[in-house]
Length: 135
Image 1 (spheres, helix red, strand yellow):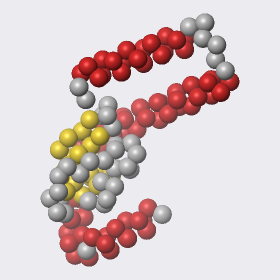
Image 2 (image 1 turned 90 degrees about the vertical axis):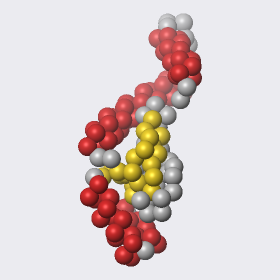
Image 3 (image 1 turned 30 degrees about the vertical axis):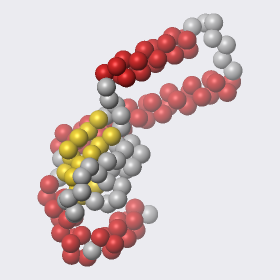
């Protein structure tokens, strides 16, 4: 993301936080519930962010939401974005959301094992097996 977008996003967040903390803001019960819910989701997002940072440090491959094992080429934590190159067919970029797609990180040996399995049984059977394991 461009730096000016980050700057204005940060200013908007600061102004909103100042308004919330001011005594003059008259909060309705619905707005208070929304604020509480947003704080919860921010906390959960930050927890997921820390987990992703730890996973990325030790692993350089991931499985995207289309079940392709990919080599990580780009990560943007602020914009919730990860991109990579597919090991199956070489398509690039294979972009996913870090927090909404359920990206799975793994090592090079695990990625190569998955790639060999895909080549042995075919992509359709591999996807069926992955979906059964997820349920």
